[in-house]
Amino acid sequence: MYILRCVSEGKNEDQIVERFIGDGQLVKTWLAVLGDIRLVERNFVNELVITKEGRKYLERYNPHW
Image 1 (cartoon, rainbow, N blue to C red):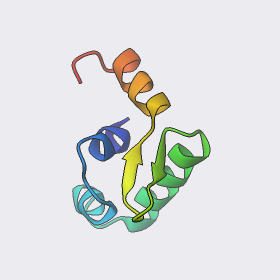
Image 2: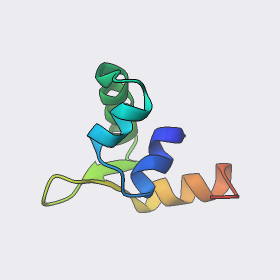
Image 3: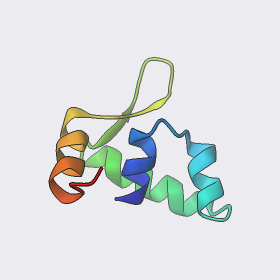
Image 4: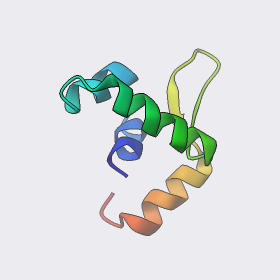
C-alpha cells in the first residue's frame, strides 16, 4: 500500500527506493506486483502512474488518502 501511495503522490522509482534505504530490488518486486494486478503502470514517457483501479483501491483501503 505504501508504494502505491508513493506512486499516487507522483514519486518516481528512485525516490521510492530512497524511502526503502536503497533496497531497489524490493521496490522493483513490489512495482512488478502492482503492475501485474493493474494498480500501477508506466505512461508514454515511462513514468509510474496509478491506474483507475489503483485509485479505487487506495480510496477503499486507505480512506484518509
